[in-house]
Image (tube, rainbow, N blue to C red; front, top):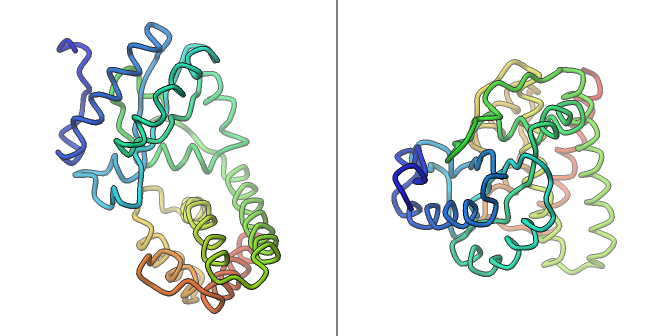
Length: 246
């Protein structure tokens, strides 16, 4: 890898992840070539010192921005899935500049998550200057909370009393729920990135209600059975009612 091709900004990433991210960057450049407009990491891995990133639970998330969608590139990247998995790197989200611009109204929560905490390893930064519409953000928050409730109800039916299955359903909705709560905070004027626990604490302050079910869902060391599932469901219902009234 030449000096020009080396990832930039790695001083923000915890040292143990430097080698794997450099290998990942080299692979993306090799496969995508001139079609690659940018590679951007987002989430906890992009926080200063990768604070909050736990390689036992998390994977490195990223966006590969191409000049145009190219299935052949995706197919070649897929061949390296096992190798990337060993490095705790998820398959990248594939976007184009036009897709990003056109998705601000339909996927504001997902783009907000990237906008708030990201690190562009090479290429242009397509996410810092995104502008979101409050109406679009509120609508997706409302929709996501309803989708989470539907998913929990259907998951509970499929679990047929099995505690481990109930726990799995709870784990599945947690990431989407925290993303949605970040969108709710954005609507309330909190624009900067915050870790999940701080997001919940700030939402509790704003809604004047303890979200013990959400707290338990974020705590990997806590029990995750029926009482916790029911508490999480009630919390999502309560926040959903508040979002609906905005």
